[in-house]
Image 1 (tube, rainbow, N blue to C red):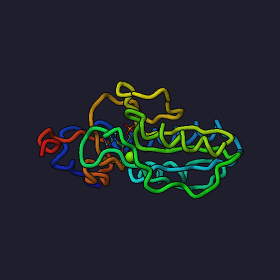
Image 2 (cartoon, protein in one colour; image 1 turned 90 degrees about the vertical axis):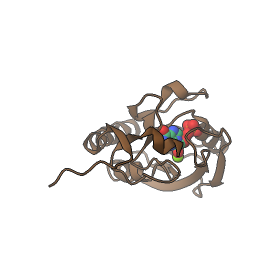
Image 3 (cartoon, rainbow, N blue to C red; image 1 turned 120 degrees about the vertical axis):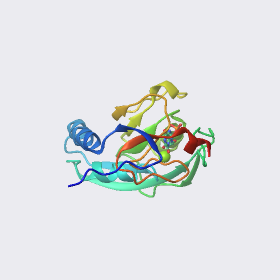
Length: 184
Ligand code: IMP
Ligand code: MG
């Protein structure tokens, strides 16, 4: 096999594909231990969590139901607008269910806080958060993710589902782009 070339817009690869896959396998085992045989309703936040969820879901050992929610806050920039719009809600009833909310990254926390507040109105039996990445220094809400892949510094990253203006989601690693790309 030839070594895959790094995208020319990438300044630095933070987390390689192999490391991501190893960590997701461990995360799936931790989640499995937590829930045992209980059925879990997995709700994934689109679009950013698609790639992560794909790798995680088939490794989860417990019975699951899958649904999704579409939320937006960023537009085409690198800072949260703070205004979270849930543009498509989940469809499965959550009452009495163990809900696992899966997203790509926990940044300010505003998005998942907003979604959690909505979900709690349906009285799930439990509600847990799983994210591939956590940027704890950016937190503005009183909420912590329960299952975290990697804790990263306050840098805008792309790849493995994360985008900048909808681009770079297909990069198989987590990377920081060259400054001129963010400025453009
Ligand atoms: P929060 O509401 O500030 O926690 O942001 C959550 C959403 O912002 C995530 O689901 C991502 O879509 C996006 N986001 C936050 N940080 C980054 C980043 O470094 N790269 C790409 N998207 C990000
Ligand atoms: Mg997102």
